[in-house]
Amino acid sequence: MSQLLIEECEGVGHISLNRVGTLNALSREFCGEIDGALRQLDRSENIRSILITSALKHFSAGADIHEMAGMSSEEAIVTRFNGCVEHLRNVSKPVIVAVNGLAAGGGCELVEMCDIVIAAASAKFCHPEITLAAMPGAGGTQRLSRVVGKHIAMDLLLTGRVLSADEALAAGLVSRVVPDDELSNSAWAIAKQVASFSSPVACRIKACVNKTQVELAFGLQAELDNFHLCFDEHDFSEGLNAFIGKRKAKFLHR
Image (cartoon, rainbow, N blue to C red; front, side):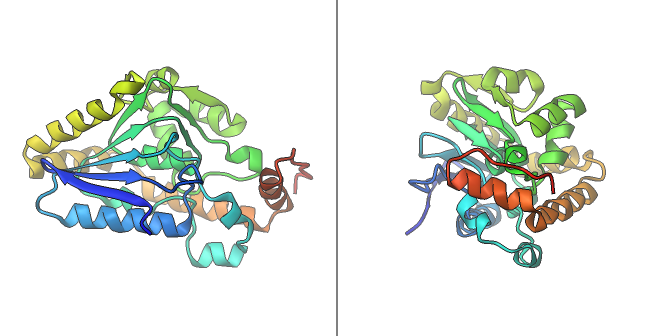
């Protein structure tokens, strides 16, 4: 059964995240399905912009903790596991994302990979990986710092604190904030507006902006290598099991 709702309208390819019962937790299977949909829409001559939304109360709670808890370091390294989608960063067409509820961890990284971010007024953004003795693996240390600056990024990554939609807008993580009941219509209007312009030009604009992200590929690889180190550490296992067991983690700092 598909965990996505996909439709096409007026040049917009719409992907709605719908992994019911998990707050759209990003399991490997779910991420593979998202990546497959992105590839298909990016290849389609009828699609000129892509819109990502959530059909649930929250956008995404991030990586699937239950899946990670059973993963060895060898498996994580061999599969290049990053806790998020992989192909989104390679999509050539403009990607608009509409965020409702919580975008946490890998969910926030997914948002950071997009080009235009529309947030509902009640939306919240955070990188809580540190609370699990983990760290981002899909670009959180790289894209976040490039968007909001070093000091705000360090604050978010080292404390796990949550940003409101207005705080995220002020920091540069969000493009626009709209009332909750206007999120869908606003995001669709923007996606259709982008799709109405020359697609080759829009793709070139995106490519040119992305090329200014100096050494991003090097930073992403360094982040992924360091993320994989977590799988061999006591505190990472403790953090994941404490989360699953709904108890406070007891870190031994090793």
